[in-house]
Image 1 (cartoon, rainbow, N blue to C red):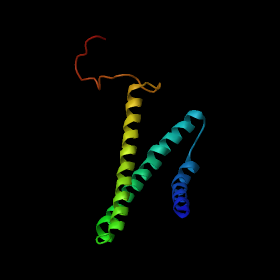
Image 2: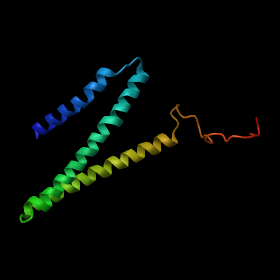
Image 3: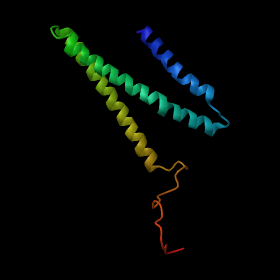
Length: 125
């Protein structure tokens, strides 16, 4: 288990190191934007990939390795279940965050816009 944690932290560090070294952070706002962008563009896809791999590994254990062994089948089913739970939790949190950012104005929203104006005569100017 310790090897898996060390490997995961090493992989995450390897992905994040170029982002940190190329970051031009001038103030706190830039730092916050950098952290949020790093989470959205690096951490979330890695977590989705890990959940997908866990699900596939469980399917492999259930259908290939444990074809004749009930104990291995049970282990594979549990891995598949944990992979699905991971997907469900991540998608739920992602949806809640999108609902919150869509309904609460954090100062960067300009309000509801009517889209691009049509060419021709515009009334009310």
